[in-house]
Every structure is written in C-alpha cells, then in structure tokens.
Length: 139
Image 1: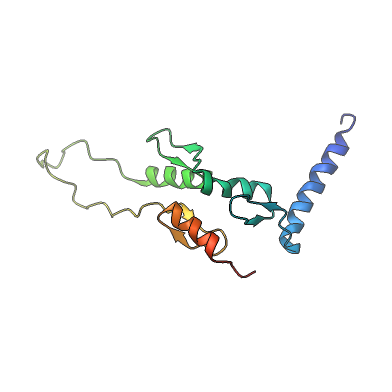
Image 2: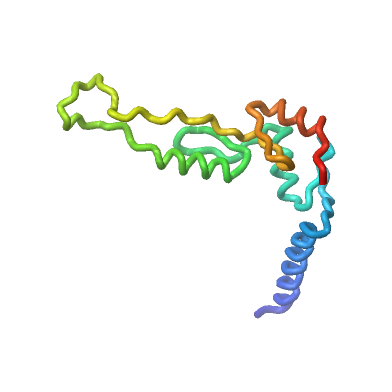
C-alpha cells in the first residue's frame, strides 16, 4: 500500500455505507430547487434535474438520438441491434419492389418521461412536470 491508502478506502466505504443507510432511514438530503422533490442520492438528483433542463447527454452515434439517461440509450442500442437488417438480396426471385414476408411489429415510442415516485409515464415532459408539482406521493 501507500501512505494514506487505508484512509482513502475507509472514507469510500463510509460514504457508500452512509448512502446505503439512507434507503432505510428515508433521509433525502438532496433537494431539487425547481420543484422541491427530494432525493437520497446526489446522482438521482442530477438525473432528475434533466426533467427541468431538457439535457440529454447520452447520444446514439448511429442515429443521433439523445437521451437523458444512459439506461435509455442502452435500451435504444439493444432494440436497434435486435432489429433484423433489411433484406438486400432477392434470392427468392421476388421483384425489387416487394416487401418482406413478415411486416415489422409497430414499435412503441420510447417513454422517457416517467415519474420516479409512482412510475407513471407521460408522453410529454411538460405533463410529467405538472404531475410532479401537483400530486404529492404517499411515503
């Protein structure tokens, strides 16, 4: 080890333990200044604030779509990878104007505006903000 190494490890463990204990104590020391919503972890507040700022820092390099959460981008990337490629060859003798045998299932638009308290989803960010400002959630 190096001088002070154990101290750094102890501080990291203590910080993680304090953060974890907030789950059990219900303490939420981080407050959104826009809507007053409280959070037990600073990263959750940072993520929430994107509801108000519209910031979408996670961009798909393939199509350019941006997302407010990395998990939404990962889902998009997975869904994109799961889609079968368009058929390029016409080995079955069909003419070039034909469509594939099986039509693609209609994809649902991604719902990014979800209340973190009750998990209700909204198609528009403004509706989520109104919901959060107008309806207190039971603890």
